[in-house]
Image (cartoon, rainbow, N blue to C red; front, side):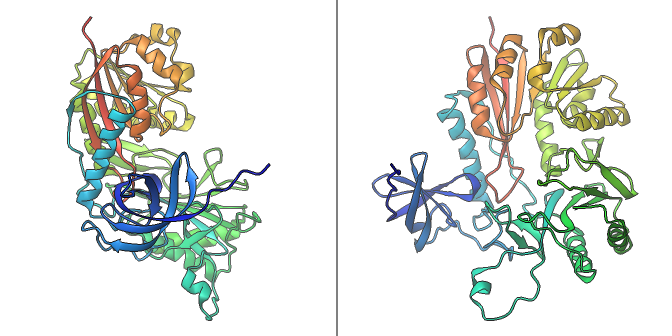
Length: 471
């Protein structure tokens, strides 16, 4: 028997909050909650509700009955179609106010936490051109706007280099200007697209798995280094040589020019070899007087200036001493551990990605952080009594896990380990609140500091400080 489909219906309501993935939380006068796109808090809307997900209706705006006073004109020409910056049409002051509320709500609703000192969110001074890394996708069939599809004009060129449309792996919005990364990012991307079309190189199609050009990565640093990585489907040496030589000649400021051959069905390059075409195999960033070499596969905080403020908060919360042993779990290329190394006795880092551990060891060496040791492995597997016997019980434990948060086994082991302080850096307040709640019988939440790393999006970082209770 087929499941009975719920009927679509139209409701009126007021947008009251921001949600994940650009959705706006709305409420009818009767108190029913529903979610829509393309609206901001304060808007009054008439919405068509089309489906129910986890007990909440989802839909889209049919008519704006009243516009919010917090609306603003988005400066990006691609805003209406690009899925990147969902909240460019909302004033930045209102954005960070709502993000701070998101963290507070998660801690109360999910974790039932009492926070002794909750500091106001640290917003960005630069709300555009703040990203140090962008990835673009080639497509042989660019996404067409409704106006283009309804036009009688013939569209001669369908090749594109840009971003995925929201929720679509096979639809690419062609981008001529992105406001997220400083120049020469736009100039490089547009040049590569133009030269590729001139050379009649084929652009990738994810459905047929055909096409030569697949992806493009551009990374920048505050120190002026510039990395460009071209990802192609096959080893066409002549095409690679000609295209990258043209890029090198046009942009002599590029300090690392590399390419990857990816014959797989997916876009991930973490298991593939990176070939150096010219320059260094890395770029170098500076944070707090420390220098970090970043490879093409390395994870590094995408907003360098806010990363500095985030790591400074870790330092302040740590109140470290030279006698302390600190565990840095999910340590990546060693950025947090090396940042605090001067203030502590030892840093023991654990990271699953082998290449990241190699870069962490390099970064420790160039910063003369001889008190830092980094180990490869899944944190869940590495944390054991044998590991503790070898390295000692940490005085302070720092965790910076992925969005999914900590595995329950890791949460349990840390609780049994009972470090004096836990500093939990999170990119997902919901999973952070869930994890922190488990420790509340033995720890007090002394402080929290939200940090906005990604203006115009729903993403937010939060730093929490726990102290073990006096026995």
